[in-house]
Image (cartoon, rainbow, N blue to C red; front, top):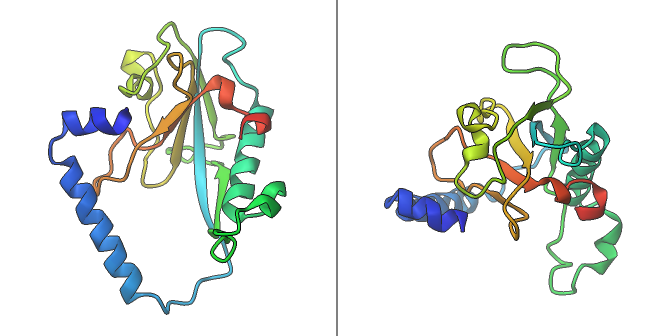
Length: 187
């Protein structure tokens, strides 16, 4: 739904996405012999929690559990790796990516990487309203330095969505997840 909405809003998007895919494949082919570092690429995460009641105001621990589950999935250390289908076993591997809650905000102040806002806006949809303070949401932190995740009440049937790479950074780049999908039981 999000991709269709974005394509309707930006008719040149599909062509740019195809161009990015071609560029990535060329780069991969030209750099196949690059030695991969054993150190993980660490991505600082900011979690924007939007809530109108206490059930939607997910706990810090649920957010920490979600980040841990992401790290297990991206690092291929999750407990269910033995269930990997045979067709994927030869190529299943760690991505060498690790997520951590941001320790500094864009102004350099100490943070736990979680910001919260009580709001009367919502439930939210794929139109990115949750990503703007002026419409009841919270603004993204610099998307070139942080991975932004918004946790909020989404319209029924929508568990979450992420923005596809387009070749241009935008102040909406990140992931949106329904508050009911947060925590280890849902990841």
